[in-house]
Image (tube, rainbow, N blue to C red):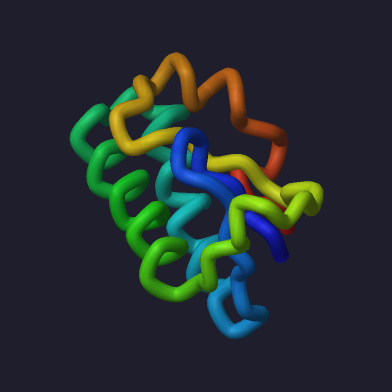
Length: 92
């Protein structure tokens, strides 16, 4: 799976990390839906951190489509709400 973090680039996520990303994605989605800013910040940071630490950066000169697009670290709840799909930010 290829995940793009807005403003940072793309990352190749190993299959072993996808389940954890979906858990964090669900937590972000719940925080957005409830309007809980603190939980949103915490869970978005954890989601982005998991991608940064567990995935391999895709070289900038490599052009591949992204399976998911994650917001930048300082995105607002309103901005993330616009990115959300029915099943969150991460498909599946």
